[in-house]
Amino acid sequence: MAFLGIIDTVFPKPRKPIIERLRLSILDNWYALCRLTGAARMRYLAQTIKASAQWRLKALQCFGYHLIRRKPPPELLEFYIDEILFDGGFAKAQGRYRPLPYSGVVHYFKAAENRNGLGEWQAVTDRRLLLHEIPGNHISIMSEPGLAELSRSIAACLAQSATTQPQSSQNKKSSGKPVPLQPAVVYQRTAWHR
Image: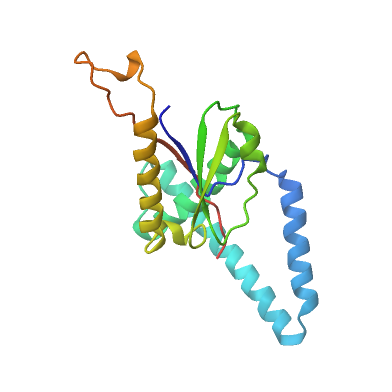
């Protein structure tokens, strides 16, 4: 492979069991309630119950569209992708995934404001992990102006790897000229709660 790039990706870890996630959610809400008093406590409870009910209603609507095999309307599509597909299916698959050792150079494009540990990624490459810091956070590096810097960094790495890529019989056409390899860039969205 000519190029392997990872864009601000946390190392995949097993998902906590549902009981543990429920326990942590209850504790978070309990601590929040303990810090509040009187009317503020009642507002917090009302907002939490309302948000939970709205989430469940949207999930039920998405399930209905899924049953009748129709695409959800635009106002539900983002919720369906982020909350149902991504948070449900992707998070489960990520929890089961274990990266295998990789015998090449890995370019890690890290958002400067994030504190992702790189030791676990370093452990799966027997050569080296090259760090490229991009100004911003995990979300802002995927929009301007962070996206421009990310694009420049990836382009520079691709150009460099194209000049250092050893030729093999797989990378040649019958004319004998090298065929540019397609980059294998791994990008992981991180679930965040608004």
